[in-house]
Length: 200
Image (cartoon, rainbow, N blue to C red; front, top):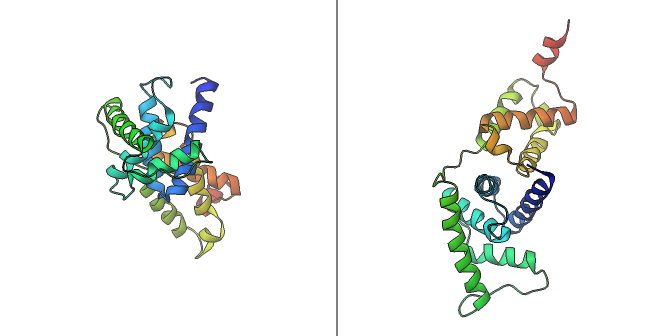
């Protein structure tokens, strides 16, 4: 992947991050949408579809697959106001712009499903990260994990990892372990067993 394409995807996921905050999406819905986005571009050129319409479709489909309640009206308005911050929210009914965006969302979602080969199962690293952090907590004195800031940083690193298609390159349990390793290095944390194993 060349730098121009990397920059394109980085900016797109940044837009998705902003939209997820405005839509109050949980971490798994954001991750599911980002995963679908990266799966789509694994086989489709960046010139073949409008990125904002695709991002809307990824959020809409991820919410369906993960059984989350997110209204298409809200998705459309959040992305519309991201592109047009000076505009008022769109209303339904006979509003041609809203109806056009709603139709584009439905059409693009069908295209998205076909582009990913109808493979819509989302295996996310989040439950693995929860389990692994819990296991680490058992190795440490009570309360030490929370005081270390490791959990907060690990979740932040996981969210940031979706700016690149790492979710397509590694199984979810390996990705979550990598996230923990990065977070531990950033705060200089070592587990008791790791320290002992490195002593001569």
